[in-house]
Length: 350
Image (cartoon, rainbow, N blue to C red):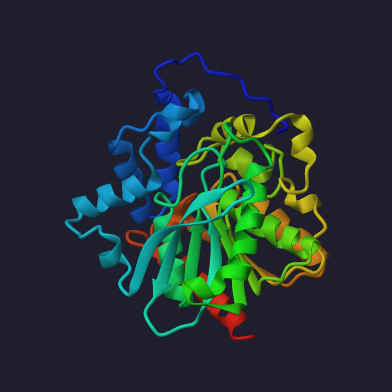
């Protein structure tokens, strides 16, 4: 990225107390009440600053999903997936990756099928998190789009540097297009979706599928995607110390991901520089209190310039990772319903 990442001296990994207080003060003014409650629940779990940690420690930190569970306990509510999203069942399996099997979770809505199928990629900066952390978003999409969702754990950096995750994403798409019947899916109604790093993978996979001559997805849902490689956009500067994602964390993720600075120019990472012509319709969802908000706006512009039908909504008062927190955030429920509406329309041919 355009700003080099400098290692911190703080070995304990605790957030800087001054920056932490400033971040909380800004959130108190700009965030919705339920988003503030969720942020407080996360803080109660004692998360360390990801950008100060080694990878193993970073992967062990309390997640956004942990914060949702903590808030549900505080509210005296049942936090089981079945209670939060009734009418969707799930099972774990393996799908084909670029170099071997990948863990995946299949979500299936009520009904007889065959259903539309959504291949979904989780977030985490291509370094941390997995399908468990992002269960809320994938499960919610299955419910709202009335579709089978296949959520894949692609290989992560730094063990597997760029472009391993992108190679796995395309391999998983090949698997879905050929094995769709095994998940009670309809081969003529397939879509791509993802959050954050996964929002990038969803768009990049649509491009790769086009270039490989594979069947095109009906739609691409990209939730607060990484779409370019500058840390100096309007939203990076505006939300430099935001929670749960800040500017320094993104630099930390990219430092672990890339093999050299040349990778930053690759159109798989910098989607705004890719050949986007001929892609299926795209829906972009952003959060106002998110360093990646401008990425979504720039991607919208690039898609429109390429003649791709695109619609983007940016939700006020919420932060990065809000989409999967529909159990506790009103804007997440609205965003999931909007995503489901867009996907259902695509699957029905409208």
